[in-house]
Image (cartoon, rainbow, N blue to C red; front, side):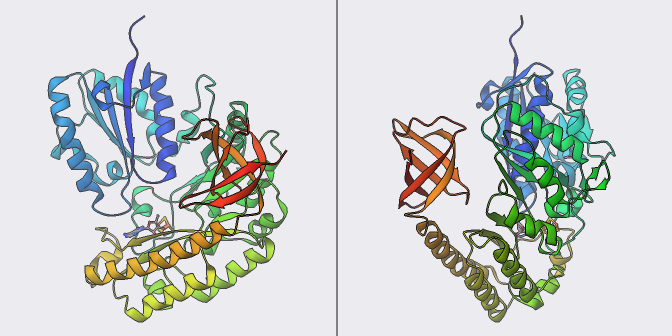
Length: 440
Ligand code: 5AD
Ligand code: SF4
């Protein structure tokens, strides 16, 4: 038997990309590839790129530049670019970096095996279409490889919201939901392979409206179907838009025991003027009211969010409104970014906030968020949490897992196995994780 070919995938960006990279590795697994952690060993290198922030395309070009030497010494090495930069740049990538053999957009991964055959023949392969077919169905798993206890499952892709700063509607296209039966089959398959927690993924996951046997299902209805899957113990979903937070989904947080008490609900800013200019179509007040309703349904829920500071025309007063909102919500986790221009988006044309001002605001916001994050994590000390063990810790006899609130929890001497869910009494809170003892 010939040596398997080696595939090196470098993944940038969001969980959707992590999921996509796994599917690409599986698709190329069917062509005899095994994954390697070392680009030097690879017969194919794939960069699964992200375009959401910073100078994404430029970073990809400079990363590609680094592989030039490698390719010069190994002419059979094939280099591909996938993900949102591939979608946005298309043919331009091959023009600027002629050593690139393959460019594949996020909607075309199921065509990778054919594209691989083409590049092995010495041709170039480019596919950045938005086809109608379900790429995940086409990518359906080959052999039943064992999986870790926590997995992502994409249920929805694309976005119709057109926030004024964001490239997603352009790179990932219009909102498309996968049919429920396919998702349920995939969930069943994941559980058979050892998965106990599934995070449903979508750029606008709560806008989910996939076809079911009796018409479209909402995300909450899909969650209730997943709730029936034996062996699946935990359900999460990300990322949600405030405007799609439907009543049945809020209610599910109070009534579905498999649905974890954690919600990522980006607000982006606290000033109504800025929210309007961002085309967010919600106000600070309506967002706060929504959080209140979610907390009525599930009082202990940990909220998480995304923020952009220094959006064009943001004044100190506007920024103060963001701080006020953060102070009211108290996020357990939050991701904050300095606004960065995305060519082609409406905000790119507007007057920019000076970089030093935006930096300073970002720092102030992040220190407030870090304080809240720490307070919420510390408040877990003394409580009994449920922990899903995911991997061994750094020390002998130590296991690391996640609580229902998504905090990392370390436990020593428990004899717990990967995939076990145990009740753990939290005894201390460190910089980035909690420590606890399994309750017998
Ligand atoms: N500049 C800064 N942050 C951005 N995000 C999206 N686009 C931009 C941009 N142009 C942030 C938003 C989004 C998160 C995934 O990335 O906060 O919720
Ligand atoms: Fe981008 Fe999210 Fe806005 Fe859609 S809702 S345009 S993905 S920030």
